[in-house]
Image 1 (cartoon, rainbow, N blue to C red):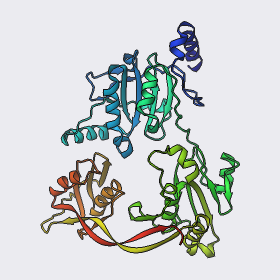
Image 2 (spheres, helix red, strand yellow; image 1 turned 90 degrees about the vertical axis):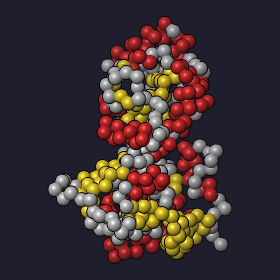
Image 3 (cartoon, rainbow, N blue to C red; image 1 turned 180 degrees about the vertical axis):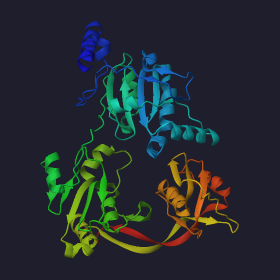
Image 4 (cartoon, helix red, strand yellow; image 1 turned 45 degrees about the horizontal axis):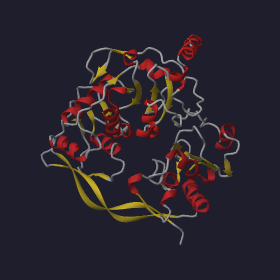
Length: 426
């Protein structure tokens, strides 16, 4: 198939060299770029004028395909930008959403948006073979297809700017950074060895600490119940490393419980006008600590001392008064469980359903979608419940409207909370 596409591509080049080469992209290592896009068909569509669609129907337009998922809050946050681009460039451009987490969750998401009087504007399709072809391993991912059907770039959301789109449809040279190809790091190997295999110049400290490793996804392992002798974090900023170091066998400190008091905030978060892909190269790190069994109870203490020595900050925990969201229940709240049904939990950013599960599962799901807020469950409820919330899950007002049906509410109140404080050295 690849050789056939190459022949087709050569014929098009000979016939129309100017048009086929007029959209130039920075050098790409992805073999799909500059290939003719296969003919994909869609028979599962949302928000489209027809029940079926073939990608070739957009021939003559510039197409940008957005692979997204309902659980991806950054994907959803970018929808207004996509809608504005579609409006700005009109019929010359076609933005097409392709959902990656199935029909039911996508359907629920669209219904929730309609119910909230915030309907979607862009069409959305579901096509697993298209996701497999483009090797979608994470969202969001954008595929740029020119008006002749050729794949011109595969990028992340940071490259989707009005200027880049204008250059794309204007047959001008555009320079975009292609989406990094994910490299699977072998977590079973010591980081020192794995890092050298990926980038021999990356190791900078013997505990081990390395600079950013290109292509490696951010992740971490805390010293849990099974293995208390090893901790690692891949491509984390300084804040993330301290969150892990001040955690315990249940996990790291939550981001909502971190206070940074520094005159150099650009070391913790990228400045507004700085490109994240550039910033992360000098400000994210991979760290690993392995200790003998007799020192496993001190592993977090050792990591904290390590970080203070390596980065020079003063980090500690103390109680501070914080504005928190408190989950409360009315006195008349009754468990709505049906113990005859199979326990089930279904969730997406468009809503959650808890059936015959402990009440704590509902709290966990609300916290999951609101990780920038401190949330406490003060209901005192422990029994199993059947509860469905159909709302945008990071919209507290929308969640409260749904909770009210069950005699529940989220209220802002001050509480004394143990916070992780990271300060510049004295």
